[in-house]
Length: 89
Picture (tube, rainbow, N blue to C red):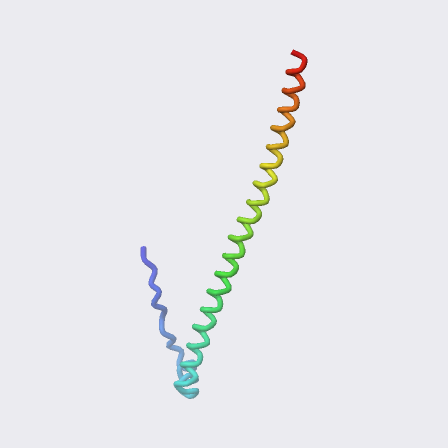
């Protein structure tokens, strides 16, 4: 039903010993770099999403502009045909 976002704490003795030897500053820097990377990934994802949204809007705008021109051209041609036939009646 619900997925937990609390990940297991690393219990590997070699890893814990390495962190202990490198000190508190190493652990803090690693966490800061990790969060910085998460933020950069989030910003990049937002830019990509915004670019896709704008691109779709622009492509749809061009598409509907061309479609409108085409429909107006067809209507104009139909009006010309109707006027031509109305001259004969």
